[in-house]
Image (cartoon, rainbow over the protein chains, first blue to last red):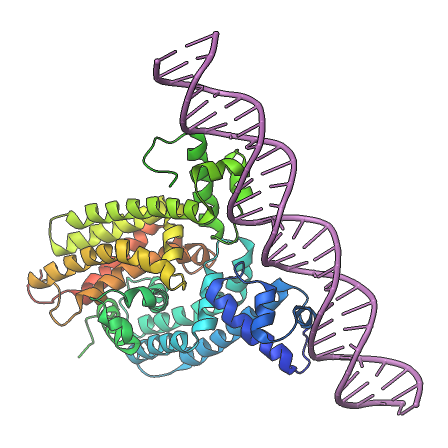
Length: 209
Length: 209
DNA sequence: TAACTGACCGACCGGACGGTCAGTTTAAAC
DNA sequence: GTTTAAACTGACCGTCCGGTCGGTCAGTTA
């Protein structure tokens, strides 16, 4: 098996860099190995020296992107503080991550929503499962502390919060074309107002200032 | 230009049917004209008798799907009644449409979120612009009637509502794999609870029972 | 200096791609 | 029953695809 734990050569790094750019922008099928080679400034054969196949190259950059996301969510989910601040900071941090890593994010979102049956299953099992559980646990903790309304489903709340960030990221180019949606240019503002609406809708009215 | 306003032959209908299935499941690049022909039970050359090119075939099914969606949203946005019921019915109807037309919906969502610069621009200009405006106008009306909080951005509210439906539809296969998200199997329940949270977060606390 | 290794390349392979075309079948109009 | 136009087909074209091959070369290691 190629591309194990050895140090990266300059060419391999260039290949990975070109691949993440191209696959992220155009998807797996629309990218040819010739394009990757040309964009990376190496020969096509050299790619096959470092990676077993096109699929293996794709997997490699997907794996790295998924690890980045997992690390980020772990950090965000660890945060202490009040329920409100935890939710607020998670949403803002998550959207900032999407915004700051658009290539990797596009790649992962595309893969996660792919209808390829088995293809996304691995990603969900190994990555999204634990990510989702972390977010749900924040809502569960808030519920036990009496901040989140008792009748709400924590998993549904987590879906709404994460979904709003992801949808905003996905739809941003589209929203930017719509004159009404001037918030499209200000992700931090979107995140703030989105969380404000969500929390007001989710939190227990009793025990609040 | 082929495929104008003439009546459809049986073969043409079969081609369109196969195309919408294949393009929707696998995307533009991953589908070959040979596959479409085989799936439709016609020769490849026959597809070119009815459509100018692969791109034209794709455009044809995309156009039809977009018109279905536009019609649905117009109907949903016309509804009278209270602000709450209009929002609630819109969200439920929208999600039901996504759920009932998964192939066309997938096609449109994929196209709308594509990063192909010019490619999605036409769709946004001609379809999503008016759809979005319809939804925003519901929120604006609610705001003028005093139901929606004055400090909220109607366009942001519309994005949250529509985004929750779209994200749920996109992520459903994924959510179904997560044991916590048992609501994934019940779109009507998701829609109901989602709207309940959203409205509670958006509505003016004064003037309510 | 000889043996060996990993990085790298140009040329090539079989096959699939989108698209074309000359010609056949079908079916309605006359 | 012939005419006619649309529906339809198999064979074919040039191009690009993912992947492989033999081989070069700079840099270790012995």
